[in-house]
Amino acid sequence: MTEPPRVLDLFSCSGGAAMGYHRAGFQVDGCDIADRPRYPFAYHRGDALEYLARLIATGDIERYTLVHGSPPCQAGCALTVGTNASQGWGGAHADLVAATRALLDASGLPYVIEQPNGRAAIRKDLSLCGEMFGLGVLRHRNFELGRWATARPIHPRHRGYVRGHRHGIRRDGPYVAAYGNGGGKATVPEMQRAMGITWTDVREELTEAIPPAYTEWIGHAFQTARQEVFA
Image (cartoon, rainbow, N blue to C red; front, side, top):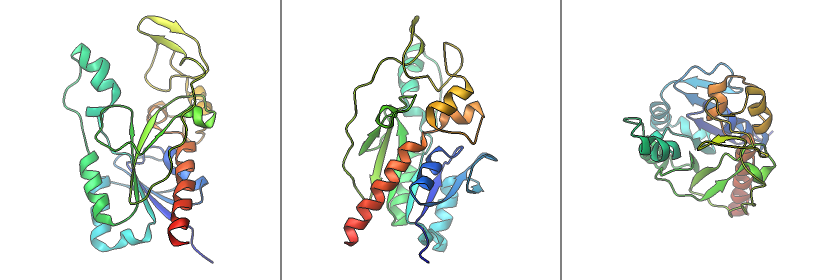
């Protein structure tokens, strides 16, 4: 019996990306520096870059078909370069994107680097949005694809506003704000429903998670691209 393809999920957080790959037919192994008892698949707690470097050095990286990384880049996120910068808030922020890319290139494997909207230095080979999948969040995310490519999906027009307060104005809309606290932000059950995440009810994990629908789409796209290469 043929083993299913395996994906290494680095900086895995609570497993939003992992669940999408699982639904696309992958086995998933996660790695994050924090304790993630709710992560729904095999999990290694430790520094993601050190772990990846060790897998490359030992050759164990070869058991994977694809690597997904969501490295911290608070220095380039929209909140840091927008509101926080304008108000003089914040200080030094982590940016592990370049170090992650260097190791992923060294691995020789196809990879995906995910980042939120902002000024993170990645190619925006894909930009996905909750409206593409009929979700209750917008949660725009950009993805750099290494050693493979796929067509960019059409970004549909948003159906309205994100519910809540912004710049002193209260708006209603079909989407919830799955980040922060106060100002009409989503409750934990609302975030779970909006993103399709049921295995964690930790607010901080939900506010960082990407909806599984995104990586389910990416996983299927990767499988199609891979089949075309070997056809």
